[in-house]
Image (cartoon, rainbow, N blue to C red):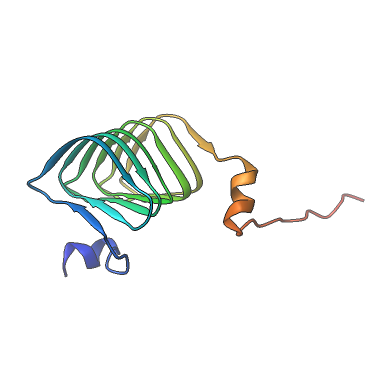
Length: 136
């Protein structure tokens, strides 16, 4: 089984890849499409689509993306306008904001976590309102 299949990433199309042997310092903006980092990235990331940090990936800096999957290491703040998923091999040191947080057994997370404002939920069109029956 390949790493992609094992991590469940095989269904995600990747438009930009920073490979295992690559390193990048600076700012990266990708208004559309998905980005995967298997190497070293230092700087700011603003991704309109999904961001995947592979098991060998290391990010030092701040990121904003639609959905974020971390299997490697992140040192910096994360803002996910959708889902933030930490795989068992993930190590995240920094504050994060997200709509949905999934932490698998074995993942390491150090920092403050906060939900995005309710307005962000409505923009995504997937707000779920649950009415609680009034006490009698």
